[in-house]
Image (tube, rainbow, N blue to C red; front, side):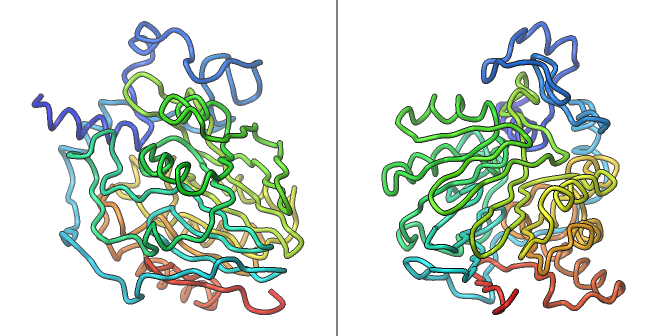
Length: 359
């Protein structure tokens, strides 16, 4: 395999949580380099896993997907119907404003806090700058136009969510607190030792300033390469302030609705849910790790949230569906289910959503 092709597959392996066979992986890396802790219902002493969930696909499945099946075309570049946003310095009180930067990067402003989710300003979601999924649309907020960032929420370590270059820039410019599931701190500190980081497990919470950040299970996995599959934890977040609760999921399979039922049982009403809607084809490969728009709507309804915002689409070409397919499928499914379109919006890059008064 040529070097560029190898790097492409390495990037995809990192994004989709793939690795070699279990035996080969055990030989290559017998211990976890990121985390050591007690065995639990989702950690076997070396790897994290989804209780009662599907196991990750293997490298042979990646090859089968890459060399078989049709791919809808994507443009080489794209523009948004919304101009790049210039956020307010802060949003006080119980106001809630959310700006789409791109993919899973959102700026959440509420209670005087500026919170970034899974920040990626790099041109590629990849371990290298010259190969791997390439950004086709500029970020919806220029890095220089960011308000002072207080907190970064990192859901898991795939390259389209954990970008070490962007994190180093944020440390230099803003010195935010990074809040992330177990094991991801080791990856970040290896690159940026001075980064302020706090970690927690599913069911735990971190209090910082006027907000509490709850760690909730979702159905996914993790990897940065070929030999570290599921050695760092993944999670959904519930952001709790005096103005209400926001459910944010970076990536998840629908998993019969369990992530949503669990969140509603633990937290009750959500003011808003930020849910992934893209990177879902082919279903035989993606179903266990990425929900499609119809499943995202089911999750939204199960969660009981007042509103939902769709992300994880239109920025990086990761899978087989067309660029606008998630938006189109979401809008069609909302109409079919009789859900008002303003209750679940697939946010465009640069689009700003503010929670209606009283929501």
